Image (cartoon, rainbow, N blue to C red; front, side, top):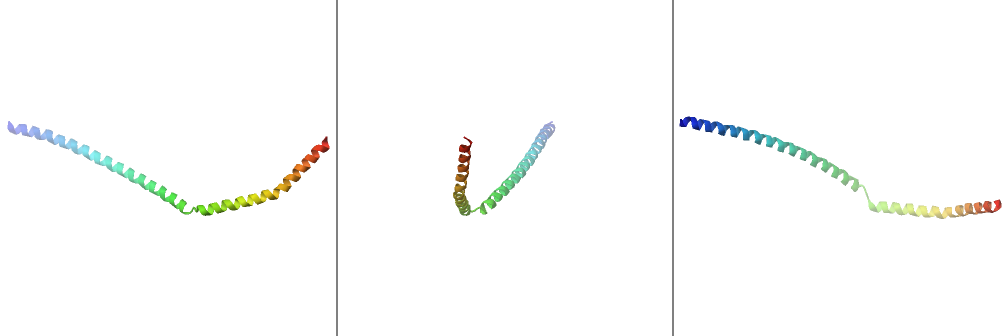
Amino acid sequence: MKHQETSVFGIKERDLLVTLNVKVDGLISDFKELRDGLNSRVLNLENEVQVIEESHAGFNPQNTVQEFRLWKDRLKFISWLLIPVYLSIIGILIDRFFKVF
């Protein structure tokens, strides 16, 4: 009789161990999937950071400021050259307006 009790206890214990083993294997595979997904996301982010760093490496604020100042000076010069043209146009319009009346 004692022999039967130990064998029944052993079967329940074996079933419990098999169930736990299956659950642990499932957890291990879930963790592997999470780790693989995390690794790919980290790799993508590293690539994005590298692209951003490369774009910043080619950017020189000193040159940009100098280019802006050059364009500003050019526009100022052109506007001073166009003032007589604008005044001539305004004069012609005023002359035509007074000839009508």
